[in-house]
Length: 207
Image (cartoon, rainbow, N blue to C red):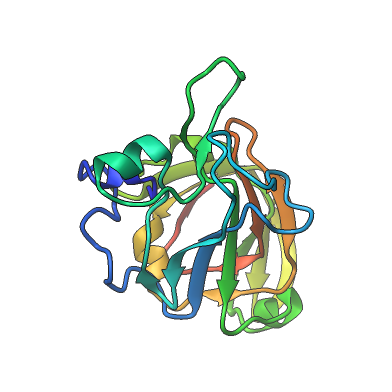
């Protein structure tokens, strides 16, 4: 949804929103192909553009999209070093995030977030994230590892469930960010992400 080719074609939920508040002002999101230990860290992208950190969302405000050289030239911008050959060295470079990171001004431990939750569900994994709609932000995924949270305690496991909502709506509300970061690789994409546990509201869970 933050790739410039799609954003400039009005094909994502972030199109025409540069400079606007798009998520909770606690959140900052950036792509850092220079991070130490990043799965996609390297001195350059596959178009030999020097790698650099690109802030996408800063304190809730949309600041940038990601560009490869082709898209940057088309829209009179500069490449953000996100030209990547996906799948094979024979393929043409395309825009791809490299090491996506969610940061926040305020972070808490996961235990603190659980203790502050009166009625919720702790979700450890999801299946089907690649089916989410970047145009609308709507998603519907499944999870098989869930636990009920009641009055600040994990009380019992839940059966497999469907989880749905709109990511932009959820991130626009108050978002809680934990300090338990993990490096994750995309199972069906080139992207890697350095992500914490996130507490959001307005999610439908159907068992």
